[in-house]
Length: 193
Image 1 (cartoon, rainbow, N blue to C red):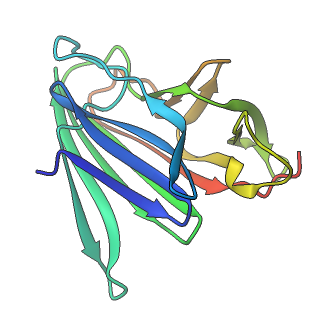
Image 2 (image 1 turned 90 degrees about the vertical axis):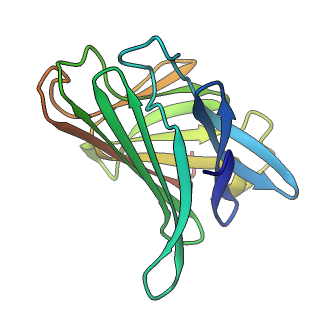
């Protein structure tokens, strides 16, 4: 198992590091040689049956398809949940996150919780209120630097944002004994706002 692993899509990057019994991660952009984190996962502890974020304990990089595309695969276990995560680079500017948790008892909470390290604004995507998106802007942004704005779009699940935190949850109730799934993508923002 790698203790530190990352995946990039152009200037976008997700970086995992070992902290205690799990891997924490941050999502951001590279500006030259400097990594600027926009989101940082809020983790639980080994005593949490239902932690604030998926408790990834193993993360590996695999290469798939004819293009030999790198993909990160992670697994973890906590309480009565078995967690999995796949992150793939879809282009030079998009990272897709696909997360699932198989529960054997009713969960009190499921989702991915992030600390917002930048300014944000919630919007509906292309006028569709069911497609939630969040534009994240580096507080030190100058001019129209696209690398200083990223957009998080929900593909499966729901998005809840406050001034300092972001919660991504599966659709439906977490108390159902089943596999729950949530997906989102991070892309460089072409938003003019």
